[in-house]
Image 1 (cartoon, rainbow, N blue to C red):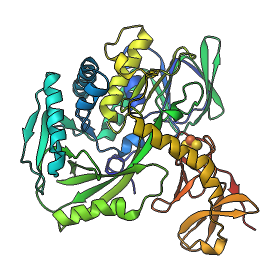
Image 2 (cartoon, rainbow, N blue to C red):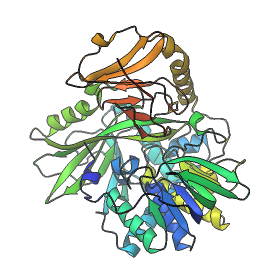
Image 3 (cartoon, rainbow, N blue to C red):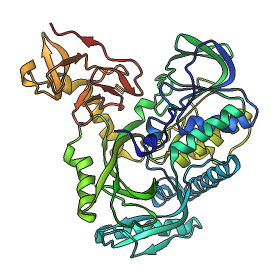
Image 4 (spheres, rainbow, N blue to C red):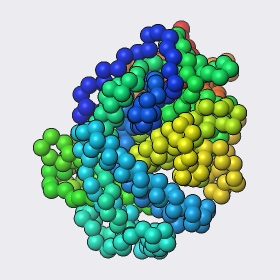
Length: 500
Ligand code: FES
């Protein structure tokens, strides 16, 4: 099922596929919120910009967000002060505050109708033992000079113990905003080509050649704003990020709803906001996060959210449900700036950790400034080449062990099943003559067989019966049951087997 945002923006945009060789100043790979925001600012500066995307505008990660615009990225500032420094935390805060203003300015200046609504943001807890974390975060915000209020009441339909409240945050219909940005880019001379999968980028003296749809784009600068950088070397972003899947439902509660945006700090995470829908408002409930590639238990994904809705709103009617993936950096800070010291004039924006709307605007400004040769006072916070020791050891340990397990252990622990052991409307891996074969049987028993080796860096895929996809536990690529790539960093389809 598509998201509320995609379903309520009825055109899949008017962009066309790349159909000839072209030359430009900047080639941007990815027409998500980061690519479009950067393209917008660069076009405003008079640069010739071409944006390529393998899908339609805003139909991947950006079209599946919750659309919250806030600098309060759950609990972050106490962590930043302690793991980095006060100066660093302050710059992170100011960069995100500026991003909120920038987005509002673009909406006003370009008159983009995108349901922008000023809202208070709450980080709440229902657990007494968690309350001290809320207080520590408020204290951190006060140190940084930010007003942050502690409240014990809010409009949620259940009792909370306490919450951090920040005023003047916002929510948005992100795909409307993105389609508005795309129109602005085209009006300012930029070009956007969708259904144009980039398969390679080569450096040739002082220019880059980007290959897509059997055509070439020559440019002085390239920007990878494609959610997960698909160029593996140099850069090694696959070794410093993982992907997280989360679920969203949009519910008609048949009651009056509350204002504000809400999130709790720890598992299971529940995030709430409301959204305009026809002549009413829907309640959006998001959460149930897990590392992408590890088959979700249905009871811990949509069902968890649906049960929550039914408990608090017995008349609930689920109108939309969808899932999304986010790139999570190891130190919780996005990677923005130079792709690698070895590749001049190549930039990257990724690792937004579920807070990609403000993050994308920050990235757009930093990269634009770098291309124009201007200093950006927030660039040091997000430096994509940072190599300082990673303090979030637990995250590193988890990722390393899981990648190792998938490369080695999963390959020798594959159960020996035969075709009959895979039920209809289900999938799994069997071994025939020592070769792994991924099998999906549809409801009628038709068989779809693929090579379950990820086309990114070769990890063994796992079957996700909730979405009927093959998912990669290493870096989060996903493929449909026919083996067609649907999510990066892989971009090639899986090999298919014919079962005789
Ligand atoms: Fe990297 Fe699959 S996504 S190996």
